[in-house]
Image (tube, rainbow, N blue to C red; front, side, top):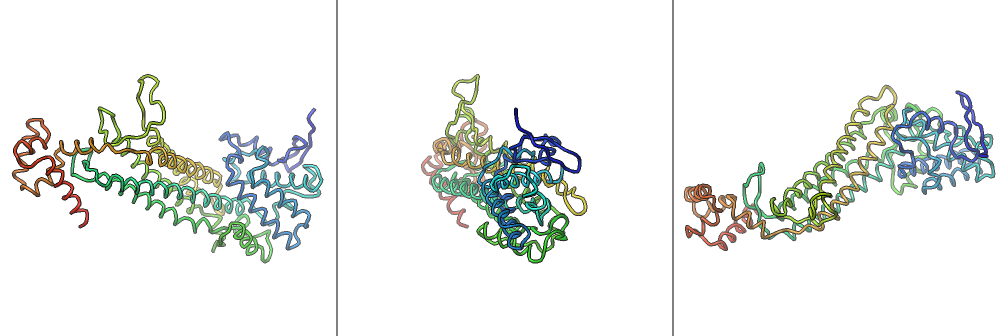
Amino acid sequence: MELRRTETDSLGTCELPADALYGIHALRGQANFPYSGETLAHYPVFVKWLARTKMVIARVNARHGKITRAQCDAIVQACMELAAGNHGAALIVDPLEGSCGTSINMNINEVLTNRALQLMGHRPGDYAFLHPLDHVNYAQSTSDVLLTAVKLALRDEARQLRSVIGQLAASLREKQASFEGILRIGRTCLQDALPMKLGQAFGGYASLAERMTALLDTHIPVLSTIALGATAVGTGLGTYDGYRHAVTAALSELAGEPLTPATDLFDAVQNMDEFAALSATVKTATLALAKVANDLVLLSSGPRGGIGELRLAPQQAGSSMMPGKVNPVHAMGLTQVAYFVAGADQSVMLAAANGQLETNNYMPLIAVSLFKAIGAATRAISMFDVYCVRTIIANADASERNLLESTAIAPALKDAIGYERTAALVAKAIESGRPLIEIVEAESVMSRKDMLNLLHWSIASRSTI
């Protein structure tokens, strides 16, 4: 028979397993909010920074005599274990909870307390020796602790996203160099327009990715500004002299780089615009790169009935009905994820706009939406880079053939033989249904080789203007 223990709160009592590291508050949160089907354990970076934040607070509290050295040592060890990924089974609260983050904070407090009690030689639930609210949560509120942990977790994840976009930019630059000599049609409104080089198109894609990394960089200082010490509404009630400076300095040391105290603590706990701005940038970056992915889908269409100017490496069978069919799965996958990110951004925007008075009740939704969006974008962009962009092969023959057989060569031809004569050749090509290059050769205007030389010269001379 399973051993049980009873815990009490202001609403009554609950029974739970005797050795459970969670407590009554987490148990109520689990029962009240079975929303997403996930638990805090699904968000290890967030949990890591919650544990790290409470670890430095415990050390500062011990130095100021607010908890004993023995209590501090046990809390610190429990925090280190939780930050390392242990005790995930005790993180039972759904992060998409409806208590403004309180159930998240309670779950963390209880796990740290009960693990620390075990380390001190006591049983879970022996709160006379160490209490989740009186000791582990001393000088803290859900508002300032969760905001701090969310920002630092998002900073880590935003940097990872920035890194994979930077890697994609480098891959696109390599393709730019590889494809520099390949002529192709430049298309506008999906119609043949002007001659260009395939490398020029990939250079444009690389510049886009580089701009997105720079845009993400602008958010790092904002995510390094923390409200620790504000407690619930910004007054700092429940803290003590020197606390805010000490915990910020200690957390900076643990983070390995300076963290900045928020200038106005009331603003910091009331307003979520910084998260909305980050979400908008993640959305913009992912949707922008999805445009690149869609271009690759179009250019690789075929292999016989489409444009066929690029070949994407096959990754898996593309149909249960059509043998041999292969789909551009990583390009399509990135586009799908971009739309998911756009939906998450809508959630962040609405949650940020609907805070009330001194706090924002929807912080859990903001955090979950951003964690999911950044995580999905990071993985999709990385897969797109590694398995699509890096493995692209240009079909130079198809690109050159499509260009020469189109009217896109007319602007370059016009510079050599004049507008009226070129217009007459184009009209004859359209009327006869023959490729323009055939008409050019048949009329002895110039050879195919001379036409190619003219196109290369025309593109090269204008690209340096």
